[in-house]
Every structure is written in structure tokens, then in C-alpha cells.
Amino acid sequence: MTTVASTTAIVTVTVDGIGAVPVTVTEHGGGRPFLLLHGGAGPQSVAGFADLLGTREPARVLVPTHPGFGGTPRPAGLDSFSALARVYAGLLDQLGLTGVTVIGNSIGGWIAAEIALLGSPRVSGVVLVDAAGLVLRDHPAPDFFSLTMDQVADLSYYRPDAFRLDLDHLPDQQKAMMAGNRAALGVYGGPAMADPGLLERLPAIAIPVLAIWGEADRMIPVEHGRAYARAIPGARFLLIPEAGHLPQLETPDRLLAVVWDFAQTTAAS
Image (cartoon, rainbow, N blue to C red; front, side, top):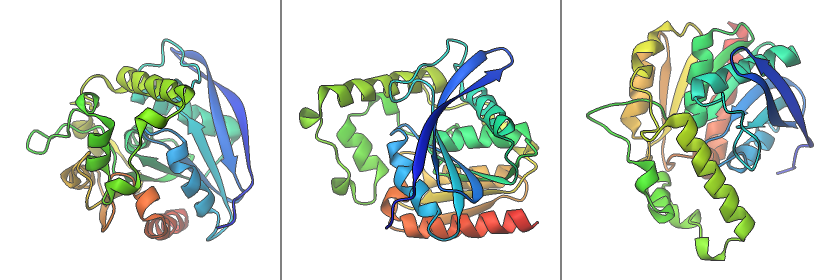
């Protein structure tokens, strides 16, 4: 695959009640606009998919690093995913983009759902990819903060051995960055990494939504995807076989096809 040219810049977004928020944004290519939101694994977990989006048709893909991840600063007032959604809605306003398809994986999907709830006229549709955020008593997600990295891999992937990390051989700098990411997760999502009130707020979403889930995801069970789709008016649910919590890594071509079909359909509606 040919790598799409990318640039990285810091964009300062001012949000009521929070103030100035510096956001590190990597921009890939040019064309139809996408906002691609990473999960707890960091922006590197979606970088390859950002490039892939531009191989089917020209695409301008914005990949922000959530403040506090990757060693970036996080203002003290930025302490929830709903607040981060307001930052990214402000980013789209500042850049003057319209017809944006928002794609979010894991906690990025939670943020994408919060963006959908804001009702920004700049967003044409939202894709939730194995999104976190819901509390389902009958289908609880595991306690992320109690898991070892091996356990996270086992629960996250259809083929976990292909993605398992050997922590003993990671550079100290990377270990420190992972620890910082984990700390930021705790601030944004709380110890439960979910919002008990999110499910009852979802019926207020009035833009097209597609919930995509890896069939083998045991980090955020498939039932969460079905619950998202049932709660959001007109939302669709799609299951991807041979994928877990990060289908953009395990089955990127399948994810690409459904994302583009959704983006084209919502732009035409």
C-alpha cells in the first residue's frame, strides 16, 4: 500500500468552560473529509487505516491525538469524553469542514457518539467501531484497569498472538507513554470506563449512525454494538467476522469497504 502524505500540526481550540485546548492533529491526504478517533491504544492504532481511507477515493483524514495521550498536554478542565467531543466539534468549526464522516474506535467510538449527540451540522454521519461507553448489566465489559497487557490482547483480538506486546523489551520511553495514556484514560472515562447515562441519551441522535463490531471482540462485547444500534433512531449494525476490538488492524479492507459505502450514502442523502 502506498503511504499517503501526512502533516502534523498543533491546532488550538477554545471551548467554553474549558478554555484553550492544544490538539495535535495529523492530516492525511485530501478529498472527502473524515475525522478518525483513536482508542486507548493511541493514534498509531488508526494511522494505517487513515492512509487506507485515501486509497479508494481521495480523502482528507484528520487524526487528532486525544490530549493527554502520547505525551501531549491535557488542560485540567478537559476531564470527560463529552468535553472532548466538544473540542472536536470546535475543531471542525475552526477548520470550516462540512460533510464530515466521524469514525471512532473503542473510546474513540464513545467520543464519536458524544459528537453525534451535539448535532453539529458539519457532521454527515458517524461510524462506531467497537465503541466503549455503555453500561449493560447483562453483558458487562471487563475491568480494563485490572487486566494485564496479555489479557487485553486475548480479549481484544481474533488472533491475539499476532498483536501481543512484549513489555520487557519495550523502550523505557514507550513504557512511559503507555503509562501516560492509561492515566489519561482513567481521567476521561473514570474507573468503570463507561457512562451509566449514555444509553438513555442516545435516542436524541438525529444523524445517520453505523455500528460496526468485530465478531471476536470480548473487550467490548458484541451486545454493546447491538444496544447502540437499537437505541439510536435509524442506526444500523454490522458484524465483521475474524476481527476483534480493532478491526482496522485485523480486517482493514472489510472495514474500509463498509465505511466508504456509509460515507457515500450519507453524503448523498
